[in-house]
Length: 413
Image 1 (cartoon, one colour):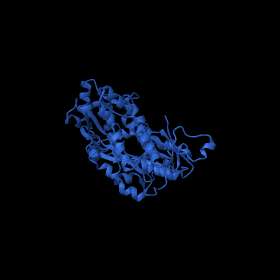
Image 2 (cartoon, rainbow, N blue to C red):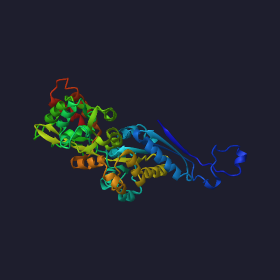
Image 3 (cartoon, rainbow, N blue to C red):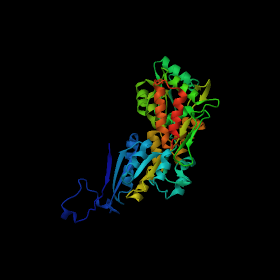
Image 4 (tube, helix red, strand yellow):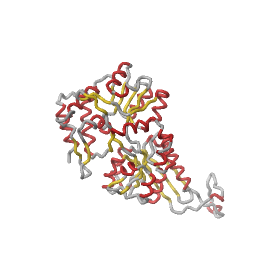
């Protein structure tokens, strides 16, 4: 679906009579301004669920600069998680302005898709330090911080769980099964699967080359071994109270009543609250039984950023639009409409943001969260591994062998 905004103010002078044409809705003479340049075509990529919000933001940008250029701004939905792949397919003809997850920054910079931000000092002063760090490579700022909430936590319906219940995933699964309901988590994505390995002493991350990964998830040493996590995952996957589903499936389950708790992020806070009403609750992730002990679930933390394509034909205007999308006012608007936590210092410190249940849950989980810095070889091996686990290990292959194969894929050159 596309949304196109044309901002064209025709100069109304007496010679219009000779041209034989005029707009259907003439602009009053005193409001007419001469465009300061030729037509400026800009393409904006953003999350599909942000379309209504971006429509308002872009429209206001067009109005604010109505006399300065003939702006033609086209919005196209594009997942923030796969933005880089889409951009790399045709960088020179890609979006001028695009939203993306911060873990893609290194790739975008290395490919030449992003130039250093010109007004970097102003951005640093107005943005949360952690968000600035996430938008920087080697101390140089390459993108504009948009949100400081790209992490996940536990949503739960208070009608079914007490404050004590939500501390244990095992207890929650039993309660869900007793009611014929489900606890959801997306295991097809390594982003969420990290939560089960993150606080075990085993590690995964990006090597100094900025491309390849290190990973010890198949470790046979330590208090918790790789096979302990794999067996715990098998047990969870086989529990009648568990379901692995994507973002759309989570929302559908929340809305139709089949899902009463789940691991997800702030981008769905408004929809979840609407569905559960007074039962709406949010908290840090629970513990789960692993290797005979309760292990606190970890999480990846991250930030959404706005980038300006270094190959943009109208880079100055693209930069202006990027700054507009990420300014204090529009980050507040994003929170009000989408429940997403601002990266702007002033917006983030507002009472409304600080008191939001989803933001409070993220803050509570932050003690167990880690910035995501992962090379591209991480994702597919994790998905292949979890597919076997979710299916109940139909191949019969040993869990250690499957962990070894996954780690070999993750750490491949």
